[in-house]
Length: 536
Length: 101
Image (tube, rainbow over all chains, first blue to last red; front, side):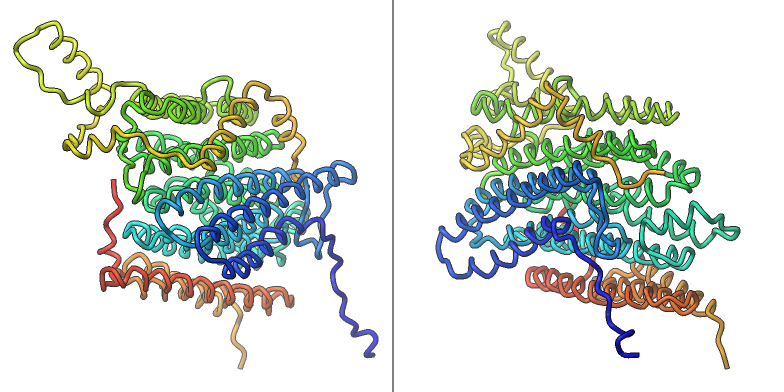
């Protein structure tokens, strides 16, 4: 009797959860050990340790990839966690982005005079949540990953306690994030009630073998899950938090959030909907269709009217979310791999862009009006060139990863017989190109001291030349120019100091964007082989 | 006396709606936190009810996960509120208007 009551413990393949363990354990050890150090060394050591931990997770992800290639994808811990090409690619992306963000954050923390590396600890925890979301094979694990990712991000948004905006961003993110979490959990509860399981494989199995006559409960659960995910990936109309949080959060965190939260959110979104609710695709594809169109159009249209570069990046991230939704809407293996490729390309572009924004923001993290970029190419040509490349890549210019990313999701969408959606996507890309170009042209235009010169009656040729230049500047601006007063303009004309590590991070992002754009084969191949464990 | 499981589900749905409406209507941040808790607990009640109806223990285990996460979430949320309260001595969401565009 007693012998029969022996407790069975599920078998664990530790390689499957090693990246999560390394990121999370590394974060805890870092928190403990950095309190032993004092002074500026403390931040430097924390950054070195964070980069080392991220690279360890990066290496483990490649080990997992070799394992998946050799033995095929597998589930472990009572089928709650899965390791397949899909999860490996997201792990590679998240750990790489984590290392780059830590390098950018170091310069930011030193400049703002914030001691210690707790920011790194929180970011590592958040990254482990994103990896867990990509590996989740159970709705409960998706929920845990989502919360590990989000709770750390709430604190990170509010991290700079000297800026009132930072706290406000944290609180807004928290309230709306908590709301979406509650909706998500209720969605899990209804799905559990309708099918009797939360395991994604069993869910797919149940749905393929049973036809529910009263499927109201299941559809309600699915709709609530969709709303929860749409909040996380900032799809319109669930994007309201995005501009405020992106603007208020410390600049390095803005890039980290855009890359990692989107990657984690979309990873779970794709797995749950394509693989588990694949049988019900006729029910959810129209919803995603509408969501994608609204997201594409609203994201691009509102980005055009922004004057704050961080708000502009926020709306552009909404627009990018619309493109990834195209891959999801296709609901096919091609769609999933194109969405993955898009997330990968976008991750590097946005982290590089936000690194430049961090540097230009100067002390106090305040100079985010696009006027701060006027004539940047004269003062710092290399920085301007890097930013221009990253912005043009986001616009989808050929020979960058951004072009291939947009091309692939559109092709997947056409394959899925959603031609009007693909057309809307391309139109929104053209609209979106406008604001990337606007910043680029501002950077390569005249400096801040040249623009608002009064035109006198004498010296007509010069006056005409000045007036045409003024008109050109006004055309580019479209919105009224806030005329900066003299000392402020003088400050804007100075060179900004670029920390060495931030420069390296920007360089890596530009290299990845351009090299993989010119030689696309390795990444495209990786994304195509990085399939989900199960696609019906 | 036995109460049908559906009643609990209806009660949970009502609690969830009360929480969601409260979050959208109320302006005090602390009350908004309570509304989030109400929504999470409505989900918990649903899990337990389905667990009994399906005869499956899994649903009751999930409740513990949700409870732990909810506690962690509130700790972080209150920390952020305290940090903001130090600046402006108000917990009204309407005062949070520095970010717009």
